[in-house]
Length: 486
Image (tube, rainbow, N blue to C red):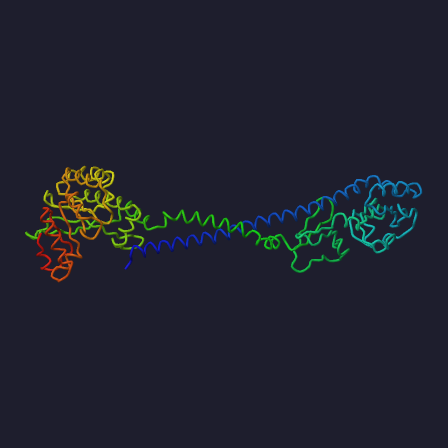
């Protein structure tokens, strides 16, 4: 059977589970957000690095393209007449190794060698060509075997005449392709099907070590691509993730604290009681009061039963102590008063018919009970006799004596429930002047048994008779108990 403590413990366990889930979700979400954020930063870094290198190479090749209009008219002119011009042009373009003029597929003039006669196709198998061409090759004239970048501009439709610019790619590699970073292990320049990196030189195939990721960015002005190899933005972000744990733990603890505070009201049995009051889930049950002399029913005691649609039937032994411990006993009593007043037609219209309602001692404070009776009971002008049963779970205050006087003035009878088991003392019988004294079932059950409780029961009844207080025995189950003096 459920008890209040078990119910509270169950709800507390639910709160703990929810808070643990919030903690784990916050920890995971924080780490995920930091991972995604750092990965984005890494991707931006790689993208920016590639863009900067593309822009730098564009800046180098752009002046070469601009000199095209100056060089093409020189093709076919005698070499001695233009040799000095070629040398000055090569000197002005600092990355240029040499400038060569070609007619009918023969290199006839060079900025380095001056007049010469060399078969271009033997020097560079891909040349001459009928269209502008950018390609990687190896130097076969000056620094034989060294990698070079060649820019070819045809001067005739057949492609046999033209201008060949040889770029010192090793210098470019030192200036542009070098990189030392956790995100970048190698930078290579791709032209056509060939690759060049300052680390591996000229390659026929891209060098991509296992476990690395390649990022490519193509130039929109010239036919080349910058390739960046590295462990990848995600891999580096994952490596750096343990450094984010302190921040994630702080956020997790913060959100767990917020969740614990937020669920204090929502994930508690006291909230269930509040919802039950609002939804009118509590049912009124009547326990008949029988006159010991006449044997007739002279009234009822209003009891509460709760069939919770979320948790099933809940015993008063569970929800009453929780309501008392969470300041909900007054709203619950107010609900009983209002519902009883609303259903007065179900009771005999007899001023001698008693309707007893249990009221906690704290309800007496500051005139709360009197205001509630004015709002819900006296407003319907009832005929039946109202009996307020004062429970003894709370300690009575001195001001409660004045409240009892007001209740008597309004025609409300006062009963002390479960007398002898709670916080009232004999002095309060004189101060409150109750009309009814209810003997607890623990005393009633002792009748007929030679026990201390049986003696105390006789004393309580004798005391009540001396004070002209009506006694009501609870839990009468036998004929002997029914014959208790009243």
